[in-house]
Length: 165
Image 1 (cartoon, rainbow, N blue to C red):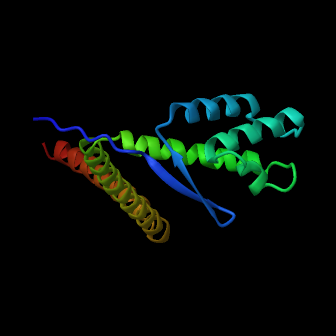
Image 2: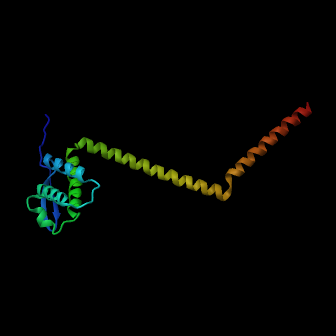
């Protein structure tokens, strides 16, 4: 029988020695942050609507009066706090939405990628060593010169064999 546990997805945030509890599953929080970020992404101008929107978002996420408690003056700090909260809310939401099987699969894939990256680094080191050896000892030229000699010797043998007949 399948048993599904419904858990709260709450996490705590400490700002200015005060702990705030945020629900990462609250759809209103996601919509509010999404609307705010779309409106102000890349916009660094501070005007009255920006300040009001920051105040609304922070008071909704952290509780009424949080904006006034946290910020003494109007600057970009509330914007940065909102972005940090948005990232953490999304991370907690994604973490909670991932099943154990998916986590195991992700861990397995991560381990395989780490192994491949390690192998790639080792091949890179081997290539560096080969290049160093080639440059220091000239092995490429040595091999090429030996091949040329052997082909000349073979030609001479063939011509000598023809002359004998």
